[in-house]
Length: 507
Image (cartoon, rainbow, N blue to C red; front, side, top):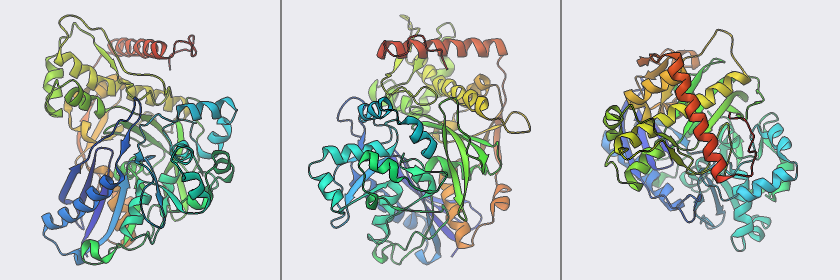
């Protein structure tokens, strides 16, 4: 048994990747699926699409690699986090489309909880803020809104899970209803310090405890797959939410190590070791990974829109046909047109947490065109990352000076974007040789559990840098550009929420 099958179920596509005994990529299969937007700020997935594309890509990658499933030692799963599925435990049928992490429909529920004075309690237990981003209020909305759902939940007929939990349930033929600590930590229902579901929060939201999956380590036994799926049962031995899996895949095992993933959104995590650091700057305290029953914590900043802004240029504005066109367009943009895009299409994440904000573009002239739009979209990633890193360093700074940022995700392939990122944050940016870090993290969890891969120290030695981007922009130019971004964010928030904190200082 010399292969690990990694499932990477993402926001816009499902992928399956086979890693060999040296953690090298052997084959990849990928399939996109539709996004549904029933109302402004609402985002859904057809749950059957999540399952069909996952099962289909797994079969496809095995066929593509031309291997026997007897050569596969284990399966590792990583997934889009916070996306919420509720299904009937008897029929296996979802009661509604999956509500995606980007969805903002529960903003009113969140505002009500804050108005009632509950946010500090939620933060103390979960490390999170009350926001539509997380799963808990999504579950409440489903139980309150779908006809018959609350009665069925009280009768014990419904199960809740993030996408990993649903896939485990499907892969095992309904025998295992479980999740891992990193996904549990993103639900707004899990006490990250006590390591258990919070009965106080579940009671407050009206969520029966028997709907919730069992929480296990990231490297653990999650059951065997149905024999008919892949020709023989395969053990599922590793699970982590996508950003935590990327943290593992980047070998960020020491406190102070920092990674940022650029996919549909952007997520930066800083390892803080065995101590959960409470943010004073509206960042999240979360679990980076949990092994042998011991959690390692992290500070996290979440940006809702990164690569999705490029998708908007392609699918919404029809300015480009392919994402790769953005770099040459950005290079050709007019330097005299400082166009700034604030991509708050589904609200602003950290450190603002403004669910009502919507996107805006500043600095347009008659000569503004696709090149300026493309540059603004790519630069917005750097500006938002600086927002996160400055907040992180105000909260906690590890001994040893400034950290190097390790990057991954689709947008990290753009040299222009990564150079601007290094310039605007003022620190080196390291891009690894293997950019499949999310899937690699899931593969390492499963492979280390199966005895195929080395321990943390050995795995860290297998991380290699492809290219380091170092800052070349003058400090004065860097600060001037960032100041303009801050003014744009302030103006965006004032437009969509003019009555909310008009004198609040820019983060």
